[in-house]
Length: 235
Ligand SMILES: Nc1ncnc2c1ncn2[C@@H]1O[C@H](COP(=O)(O)OP(=O)(O)OP(=O)(O)O)[C@@H](O)[C@H]1O
Ligand SMILES: [Mg+2]
Image (tube, rainbow, N blue to C red):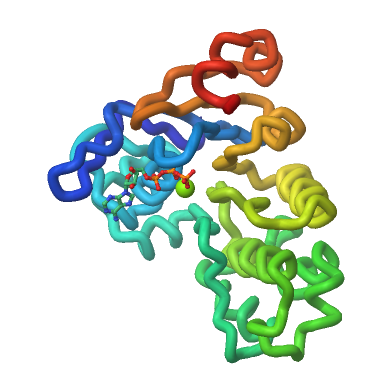
């Protein structure tokens, strides 16, 4: 596995939030982490990324144990992270935002994400490259955060609810982008609340409840498990 998380525990002060979560992502996959509000999905991504210190368990990326590493070092190893809150720099231009994403050395081959390649992916960003990023629409800002993260040449992309709060047309666009990123060779660990999005994009699914993974399986298996969907996902 490219990313292996086993028996992960996280505390915020005295609250025990993750209770031994385990999951994995392999090359070529879109894996979806599903679950209701507050079950620990974002905390899982943050602790993989080194933004929250795990209090137990193991995180390995490319076979290297990264638990306890600082986030910048994890990013340099090849993990890209797009948080739930779109973090653009509003006062500088779209192009400057993208250039700030260049963290890692370019490999010098076709797999490299360059400004040009991001613009081919997101024509809208090319059109608006000289505009202040703060003037972009919500959907465009989401494209910008994804584009900026790709500029760091991640070997695995962690995406936290990229379609949240977007109009249906934009949801579809972001879904297409997720599929294209994977087709271009970057696997994705996608946090979602929408089961429809998960079923449309992922090969494998983990369902989380109260800080634990309560279901792991293929999309087909989740579709067949009415009990799991009813208990942990549907309202
Ligand atoms: N910095 C923090 N300090 C204390 N508690 C926190 C902190 N961040 C999150 N929590 C709590 O940890 C639990 C898990 O939060 P988390 O953000 O991981 O959930 P989530 O599954 O991503 O939810 P959502 O779908 O609403 O984004 C929640 O009960 C939340 O209130
Ligand atoms: Mg969250």
